[in-house]
Image (cartoon, rainbow, N blue to C red):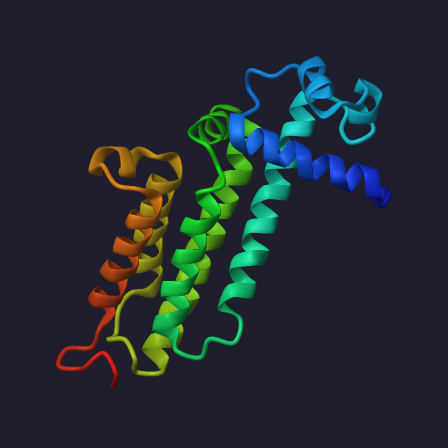
Length: 196
């Protein structure tokens, strides 16, 4: 359906993603973007029909790439506790690439916010799967996995929007580390040692 990107278009999208992550996109016009990337507006229109569609494409690309990098990071980890810790550490690492302006612009524009919300829901689903695996393997105590995952999802959303980190006065990485500790300590079986 969609045509494959040329090498130049792929490189342009990479540079565009870096620009948006660093500065956001709400304040930029297509003229600004073309000037910053040293390309023509027609080159940008070949990627998307408008600035808004370009923003949706770049935000989707960022979240898709982040998810792929996080999944690669946890691939092969057998211990469910390590998977949760590594997954959350990967999310923290990915978020360090995004400026506050980028996150604010993503949240302010409904189509990119929808992409962002899908990403948060997918993260909650992954955590739910990890929790279910841990319960089935008797690594974690019996819990309501969906409820724990939804609570984790709300905390992830609070971290991603900056609301939680701002209120607590911590970095994203510190917040994700604390979320991992909260989950793993809350899921630990009573009387079980961490190595059990």
